[in-house]
Length: 216
Image (cartoon, rainbow, N blue to C red; front, side, top):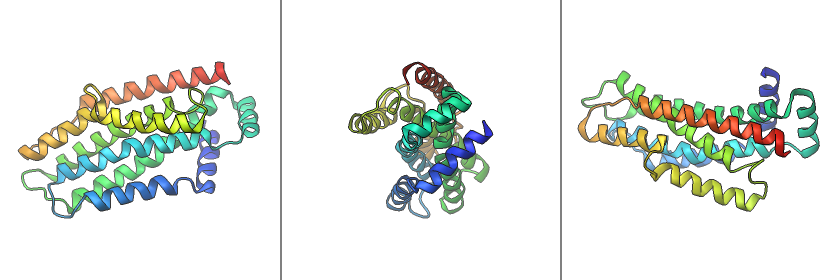
């Protein structure tokens, strides 16, 4: 699996397709976050942006290989393992961006009534919930389920929006905890949302890998 992850990461970095979601997230933060605003609100805003960014990155990794190269890798390592490596690679970059955003916003945000460790902990858990939810959206809106680019992008945008507003979504639950905490200056750690996102992402990855083995 390590070799597959290195291979997928190398493809992603050389393709420079990662620049578009990175710039989108940077612009999202630049427009929506200001130094000195309540830290929990800023952390919730940054976490929300990671849902579509992660879905986009996952889709990039799932579609970046030419068909011939994908078949060679599948023959050498197994189609399910190759698909899982692409999913993990697409999730890693937004996860790193999210961690950096949490650390930066905790440093510059208004922490009145909220300790830095508590704010960072809540932000990291919310970030994890949003990244994993976004990864699930990306896995369901790319191959092998949707191969046509137009339908795939439309489903990705719709799925990301629904993940942010639908009751029961781990991402929405985590963001609600941060928004509520921003109003009451109490950092509530969204453990339940994070656990739900882990289960959702794991189930989605298993489904996608199994479908890949049967459909491709």
